[in-house]
Image (cartoon, rainbow, N blue to C red; front, side, top):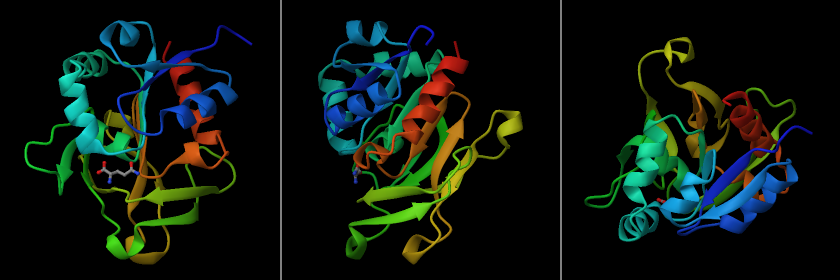
Length: 207
Ligand code: GLN
């Protein structure tokens, strides 16, 4: 195989190990990123699932907020799952007071969108660019309430997946915009690493 891609996993909070294992299983070199010097050494970043409010506070406390923002602004590929999707969104509904995100994706997400009754659930979903359905695991997940104007051809957001059943039927749960992608669900928890493979391909193509 060609030179493996080096992908960092933001390791302030959340399910970091699961993402590292999933990335390694698709042939990427995966490393935890806790400080700016570690961020400098990776060509792409995964922002894990966890809790976006904690991630925001820790990123600020560990002086990682601006460095990550700057790398994203400079075109670093990134993939966020669940809380990571929130961290990559330009706009957040039901955020806590003062909550900030790295931004980059022209989307509005709603935190904990599926409601308390459905804290977590699984659903098979179709994912644009991946052959067979995925088993998607949602845990206090956000959904994408709105995407910005302008289609993928104009640099806008491409919808990769929607939920088909239940209270969120029709809601957008996976998107891509250029070198950025995000899912409301957690492919790192299922042992099916096709979404990570999709991201590794995207990182390779962005070289
Ligand atoms: N509800 C969490 C948040 O707002 C996300 C949950 C998750 O990542 N599983 O950050």
